[in-house]
Image (cartoon, rainbow, N blue to C red):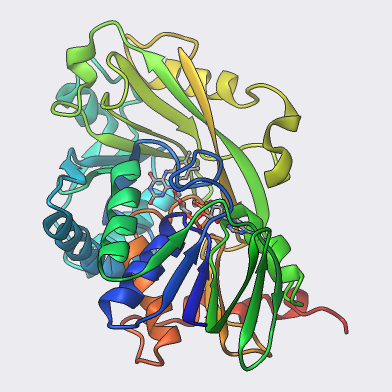
Length: 383
Ligand SMILES: Cc1cc2nc3c(=O)[nH]c(=O)nc-3n(C[C@H](O)[C@H](O)[C@H](O)COP(=O)(O)OP(=O)(O)OC[C@H]3O[C@@H](n4cnc5c(N)ncnc54)[C@H](O)[C@@H]3O)c2cc1C
């Protein structure tokens, strides 16, 4: 018998388990269907962008806590998880995403510089060739999180605090009740609370207990593009970046050279909808030709085809915000899903909020943006 079972050892489930243990909860079990730190979900790969440069004010505010929590984890684990590179958010003249990002950063008092396309081209004359009238905001304190290292550190600290991680345990059934039964391919477990943090598999698991999340799972192509002069795009000389699409979102993003020598990481922030159990049934790369066009119009000295393409998945909610809430009928089952391709940097804060829901503590941030009820018309089964 456990106090809490967390289903899914991606970054959100691991952060929840870590925060539960840190908050003093004894008897926490973290279940993972594959081997720990596998590469078939959403938390795979070596790097993620971290930034306060967000268009949504509550994320800007949550990121202040996230930076502190990542730094605490670095100290606890005795390792480096963050590298400061800056982030450059840019788009066409008057782009709403860039404008809103600048506005939110101003309100939250986050240091930033606003530049035109011409100024960016002058700052990076050998790397950038964007139109002169583009608008851009730079946040110098943004950077890279070492994703796999961070996931491992979170899990190791959780286990050091007495938590149990069982990988290769696939949850096949959740039986609600005052005590919840969690059935796996290797036996069943019981707990007072369950947190479902199953990433792309969360919609199916939630559906099995009557909650139908209107989420889409997309396959994302992580492209690594060879550059002519690696020193120009090195993480000590070039920032991470997001390109906004003119419609209030960002469409392409990338990270300077860090993982593979000589290769710049550039990805489309969209991809084909997939079934997470058959992710690659859609075939080979779908978005790389569009990403190539973006690269060609933006950067100098980058090859036209990716040298490496890896795959990863997003679970996308209609408003790009996750659900962090109790099951509407079983308040000892908590749902954490739909992190919409930007949940890594915020995971310490999301994990803390989830642990606070379990421990019945006052949430450290407003949970309204993450309520299930915003999808009221679609989420309940018609039983
Ligand atoms: C290519 C890419 C780039 C990204 N870039 C950024 C970025 O720059 N910055 C940022 O902040 N975020 C970024 N993100 C988003 C971020 O990585 C995700 O929001 C985050 O990893 C989601 O984690 P998760 O724990 O919800 O999902 P996952 O990592 O998929 O974890 C869910 C886990 O649950 C397990 N599971 C599922 N079903 C079961 C079951 N039945 N039984 C047991 N276990 C189960 C799965 O195997 C999986 O390990 C990116 C994502 C991708 C794919």
